[in-house]
Length: 440
Image (cartoon, rainbow, N blue to C red):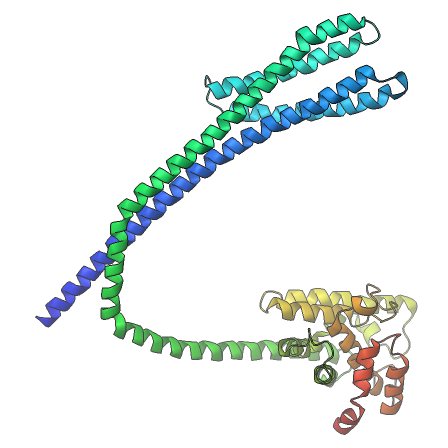
């Protein structure tokens, strides 16, 4: 008996919810239909209103220029004729739009007749004005005045009258459409009110009978959420390890052990944390930004993958031609970053990594590469990377040089502050001397 009642209750809830859903669907259909109908009507009316008002405005402009031409002396006639010609072209272009609207109208209606009248009378008006222009300097003032009064002014009056009538009609259309829309909406609300009442009842019944189901779902959600978060963390770790592996591979081509990318990443992190500690760039240095820059730092030399080994591993100084090829690794690095992680990492991280790869050889004085950016034009992450990269390169042995002492490297960073390096970044770096000595 209990099972039968339970099944009956479920059936009742199902039917109630189905009825409620049908009521909502019907209401939505009615509302969407009336909105589309109203928008369509208003759109058509607005198009007509805009068209005729534009024609009217251009005709006033044309008439003004026509008067100037007829009254202008010979010295300025060419200039005023040019303005008149430009206005006539504007009118004819607008008439093309007018004609396309006319083609969509129902033939034989009052609106279509008025629209056609505006089109035909405007064209006649333009043609008659051509005749009027030909009369200047040839016919007498009385003949010109008679032609204007008998031919041109009546046409202008007819065009204005047609446009005014169309304007009044459009206002009436909008009022009628709004009234019809409100009527349909009222009817839709009345018809669908039963659906809303049923939905309320169904919701109450569903709450009573679905409490246990919701509790079970919440427990399952917590379980799957923990699994999802663990999976996302694992994916992030794999992504970071992959990026670090690629960076190590690039470094190994030039005889490095892969420690350069780890050391520079550590230096970058130290500089940013020092800046945050002192309140520098407080509006930028969020924990998320520092994390992104630190994780992106190993990608600064990804572009070296496009540089031939003969140049990358040359023991001596590069020739000017070879150095130009070497410089290409910066721009290439930015592109490679987008190609590798552009579709799998968030945009902020990708942008920071690309900025580091493409801009870490820019100089504060604008004499760096690839774009010759200077000062604050260089992204902050790249300015920090520049100090870390140069310092580690100085104190490391390379195929083309012996390592420099830490003392000399610190001195070079200090000398180049304001020239090669952002002076503020350099100052923050130099404050870390003791810590860097301790970690070497």
